[in-house]
Amino acid sequence: MQSEAFRKALAETFVVVPAYNEGRVIRDVITGLSSEFPNIVVVNDGSSDDTAALLADLPVIVVRHPINLGQGAALQTGITFALERGANYIVTFDADGQHRVEDALSALRMLIEEQCDVVCGSRFLGTTNNVPRIRKIILKTVVGLANLTTGTHMTDAHNGLRALSRKAASCLDITQSGMAHASEIMSQLKLHKMSIREVPVQVNYTEYSLAKGQSSLNSINILVDLVIGRFLK
Amino acid sequence: MTFKYFLIAVLTGFIFYLLLLPRVGYLRKGVIFAFVMTMLVFAIQPDWSNSVAKAVGISRGADLLFYLSHLTLFFIAFIYFVKFKEMEVRFTKLVRQLALENARREAKH
Image 1 (cartoon, rainbow over the protein chains, first blue to last red):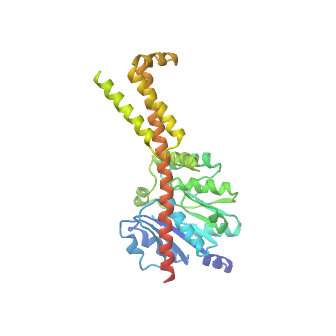
Image 2: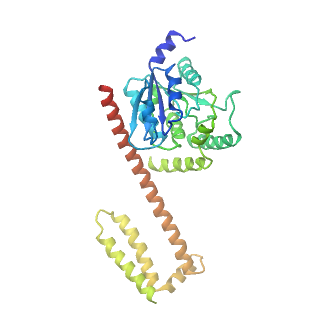
Image 3: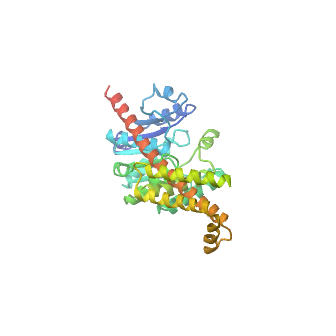
């Protein structure tokens, strides 16, 4: 049951969904989201499949990157657009069907009730742990590196499900186009002294989402990107 | 001996090219000039490289040049990698601007 205040907050919330070649699942993901969230911004990150056509009749705003830039760049584009449209809360949500709408609602609810700036989804909190073993090792490595470089103490820094207040979203300037953006986001939030909480979430590991996810080598790529990123600051 | 003259000719040509290059800072020009001049001197007098190598604890001049070449190539690759990343950031901003302008225009209609 949703309170009046939460319904009002939902109307002020924009869900940002970066999508690249997600034709197989994008309709299901957006249909699920649109049953709860009235404002959805899909950033079509230069998809070469039928993602754009599949979005045409759905109740979403589509922002199109003419070429593929990467998830980090797509997120920043979506966040900038949502802020321009007056969003008071922003939820980031992956397009590959790995996140659950109820978890997005939980994250938003926690953000509002605890009056914090950011709520990040964590698949390693509580009992909601259905992560395949190899993926767990990769993710733990990435989280360890992220905590080391950002100075945070997160249990799952590379989860695409986040809820951000307008204040937190406004302080983001994501320059890491690739997967290192998740660590960069945490680093910038920490720099701006944003209060960060974590909410337990479940991730739907399908063959499709696993194939779209991070490879084992990505933890090394992320580290290199973060180190080079420091030089560019 | 033929290769030695070829090397001297190439390095001399590069020095002239470097001196004529516009829009390159004096510091960068100076560093490249010093490096190429060192190579030129070692090409003319290979024995000198042995003396320098021994002075820094390396047994052969060829080894010293090998290490120096590696360091130089790594340095150049790193500089260009950073430059490439800078370009990537600018390019991303440009594409984002374009995407946002299109989205704003569509939202108006």
